[in-house]
Amino acid sequence: MTQDPGLASWLQLTLTPGLGAAALRGLLKQFGLPQEILARKRADLAALAPAAALAALDSEAVRAAVAHALEWSRQPGHHVVTLADESYPRALLEIPDPPALLYAVGRIELLQRPSFAVVGSRNATAQGESNAESFAQALSNAGLVIVSGLAVGIDAAAHRGGLAGAASTVAVLGAGVDIIYPRRNAELARAVAERGLLLSEFALGSNPSAHNFPRRNRLISGLARGCLVVEAALASGSLITARAAADQGREVFAIPGSIHSPLSKGCHALIKSGAKLVESAEDVLSELAGFRPSGYASTTAAAPDGKAHDAVLLAHMGHDPVDVDSLCQRAGMSAEQVSSELLRLELAGQVAALPGGLYQRLEKGQRR
View 1 (cartoon, rainbow, N blue to C red):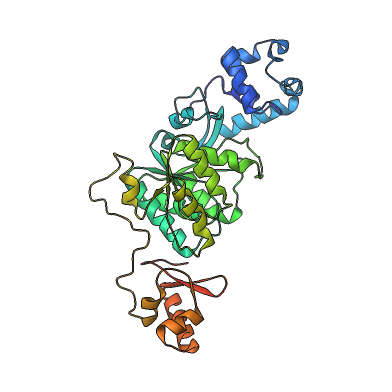
View 2 (tube, rainbow, N blue to C red):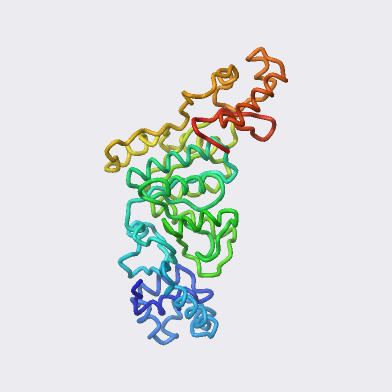
């Protein structure tokens, strides 16, 4: 990457402790580019920046952090993108608080392509993960870069689907781009860095913390033309992303689920408040004109498995979670028979065991 000659100035401002995003935007608006800000007397900046930040601006710690970031950016595939760069994502310029600087690893050109966010619960069901992956792959094949947050569950499934499709994926992190969290997604993160893009506004070495994730979420929605919530409890962070998307003027979509599932409550609340109910990727594309490739096939959220074993139980399960006793009553079978059949269907990938002794029918080809 050809470095902006003023990159060190951008880094100096963004890496100064206590100089928040709002103060930095004020300085940029008042004085222009970072080089011009830094050329000013510190007294000239005092009305817009905290005294402690101005005292730290020229400190040895800040100089060391700038040198480290510059060295990091010289490595292959590493990028530091500022508001002044042509590679800065235009979509983020539309939100009220675009970050002044972004750190990225991978295919930087993905920031200029149309994107779509797919988010949801960390404690996802197998069905939810399958839906997220299949929707993401279909939308990726339709030309939309899939954006999510690299969390376990729905986010990870969305990234897998994006990588399997044509347009790839962007993972927005709640830590420094050199800190992979959660660690269990390290292999997925490597795949994203190689074939997609890892992205963060947080300084190198920044550890994940609770207040980072709402900031990350508004970037996920800000990068995208729309946001799909696959599974979410009422207190889910995914609803923060959905609210940010609505506030940013993005389309919000949600997949409905069982009325008995806690992971459907958030999606149902979004639908009640105006999110578009979707059952297939076709439903999303019909709202986002211009992304239908030749030969595109609709991807349905709850498509039945036409080649499944013709087990009697499948006809009685439906698609909601169900317990063994209920299945015994519905199918007129003993508990031993039901348990044996459920085990066979689970091994065949047609049924998933859920917490609380419940079982759920899965769609074609799904595996836990």
